[in-house]
Length: 612
Image (cartoon, rainbow, N blue to C red; front, side, top):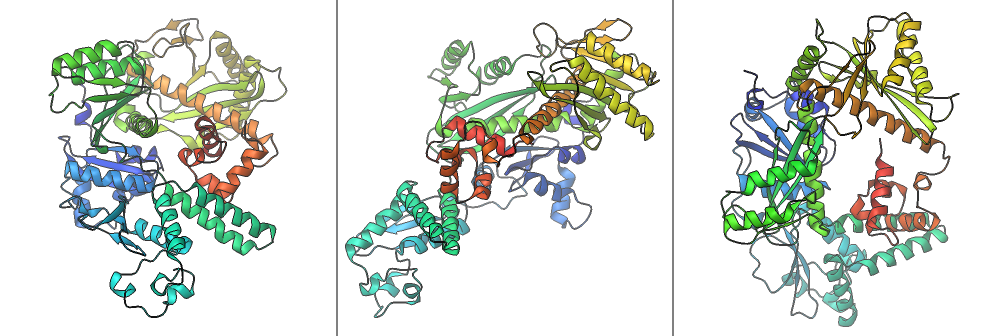
């Protein structure tokens, strides 16, 4: 009997090889599927890698690592968001290797007192018994102190204890260094003080446009006066304002719901579910349903929802289910689930604000967890064995290469060559070829040039040749590749064309051989899944190279390369963030806060600035 996924030991090497460097949360499970540990990271790849280094681990960490059987990750928009999510997961799942907190009083707040001539701001942790407003929660004490420090420098609202304030007879040092407006000795009128206090309140509630515009104006004025040092101070304040203002999406809104989406690649699918209770993400889980038909993500999601909720406990099912795709049978599913639970359940997919952000988190988690499964060493071994059987090879292929062509209406043609072995992608051996001297759109000529350059060089340098060569294309591209190999005297490479078929749907590919034979593998065939994975990687690598070549031809600044970002929008971006470096650091949500930048434009700018 073939081993199940539960029987496969955790392969840290292949898992880490493809792990994202984005911030997020990782959940470690044992062989029984029980949670061991939940952690957060600014860089998931670097943090998780530290558990598997050869030395320097303490006894507790070594005991944890020995029990790890699988790891699931959830990508977060920022490190602060990851920290809040980590706290929620620890509280709800109680992992044995985590330090468990006793109650909800661990999150700090900013407190603004009321009922005084000169109210104060203060750091607060614990029960909310004092009269006043509480702003938060913040992910940690450092974030609160950074915010208080920023507000102190900007508005000068007092932060001293009442006992100190009531016994002052002259202003303190903070007044002398412009960090306090001196209300203790009436250096500021109540009217002006309450104006500063109101600005502080608006800032803490995220309504700080007025403050932002003021800082921008001051920065521009200082720059015009050639006072660049002062302008840099304002630039740093703009940066601090943006960071403190960052929206929290881990805790938002209210109510109970499940957020579910699906991601498919190379014949496999991952469904990721976020559990949201009382506006807080308290857990997440990835599922890997078996699909023999290579169904679309929407079809996979429809089947999952029906299986997961029909007959499910009414207590465990929330009143709202948010899906990543609009399902054709959404209405009937909604009716059936509601009837089985004897209470209404609403299914939606077209969502905005924090629900859309939760959905984006779920989609990224599904993509990352499926990617990790695809590159698991045991999974790859099974696929290579299946491919060997499908192609009737005497030995398992040790090296596979695949070519693809990418261009825009015949311009900027780029060919890609990707390499796989039994351990997965060999990215150090990937190559791109900028195709020149051919008629635009002539894929045959482009393929001929790429293969000629590739294998001429391999022969000259006595480098290893692949046992199997895949060509993403039909019989014409295949014949061109075969003719080049014959000219070079290379006769021992099995060369196969991958034709997508009329519907171009995954699972419908036809394998074309140089002797005229054709073969069609079933949609759930592991060997076909390997072919799809290699073909998709060649396509991705070609597309990336094509975009890079296209962008290099625009000898302009980084922002000027982005379609739709003209002089006015560039000026607004630089004003808002204080410089290009901070624009590069901003996420899509931050970009939407800039005047004239829509959500779609923000996504375009973010993608352009962070494309590979």
